[in-house]
Image 1: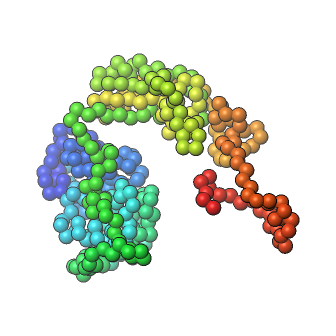
Image 2: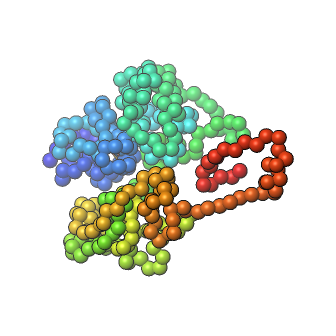
Image 3: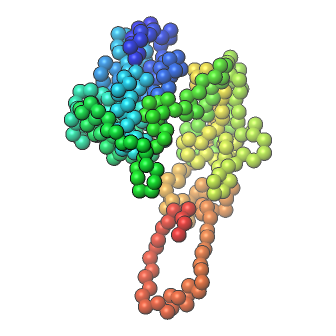
Length: 343
Ligand code: FES
Ligand code: FES
C-alpha cells in the first residue's frame, strides 16, 4: 500500500481506491466535492506536489511519496484571503464548485502572482461552475492575487445592508473553505449507500426488469422498482407526467431516467448490484428537439398523451381585434417566451 502526505500528515490507505474516495470517506475531507466521479467537472480538484489534479482520477496506490493539499490544508492567511476575495467578487453561489476553484487559484498564484487573464482562464479550464459563471470567479482570482502581493486584506468595515450596496453572502466562508454541508457530506454510523440504475437509452420501452440476482448479493438491503411504489408513480412540475422509476411497459425519456434503486452497505456493493439488474429494452427512435417532436409524424414522446404538445394556452385581454383594427401600425411576428413568464 502506498504512503503519502495529506495536508502535511502521513497517511497510508488500507486498500487501493480513488483518491477522492479516500479523502472524503476515510479522512472526511469533504471540501473535496464529488461532482461527477469521472474526471469531468473539477469539483474534486486538489493540489499534488504543486500541481492541480482531479482527486477522482488517481488511485491511491499510485501516489507513493506525493504531497496532497486540500482546502482544509490552507494556511490561516490563505483562508482569509480566498474567503475575502471570493466573497467580495460575488463569486460564490451554491458553492459546490468553489473549493475546487480555490485549489486552482492557489496552484496558479503560488507560482505566478501576476497572472494574465489568459493564464487565469487556463488555470480554471478544467473546472465547471453551474451557477456563478466564470467572470466573477476570475475577478476573485485577480483580487486574491492583489491581496497576496500586498500582504493585506482591505478593511471594508461592517457590511452595509442598505439598497445599492454590495455585501458578501453570509455563508461565503463555509462555501469557500468547504466546511458547509451538502447532502453528500453527511456520514452516519451504519448508514446505507444508495444509487439509481439509469437508462442506457434516450428513448426505449422497458420490457422487463429482473432484480433477483442483485437482491441475492450479500450486503444488499433493498432493490426497488416502480412495482414497489405505492400510489402514483408520476411526478412533475407542470404536469405529473414523469415516472419516478420507469415501470415495465413504460418509456424512458432520456439517458438519466431511473429504472431501479439499490441500497447496500457500501458503494462497491451498490455498483456490483446495479450490474446484476437485468433490464430488457426495446430501443425506439429518439426525438431530439422540439421541432422533431412537433413534426406531424413524430413518435409520441409520452405514449399516454394524445400528442407531443404539453399544453396549449390562449390568452387574450380586452378586445384585441378592435385594438388591432384601430391601430396605425400592426406588426406581426412570432414571439417566444419561457413557459413561466410574468409579463
Ligand atoms: S468529481 Fe472529479 S472531476 Fe468531477
Ligand atoms: S457556485 Fe454553484 S457551481 Fe459554482
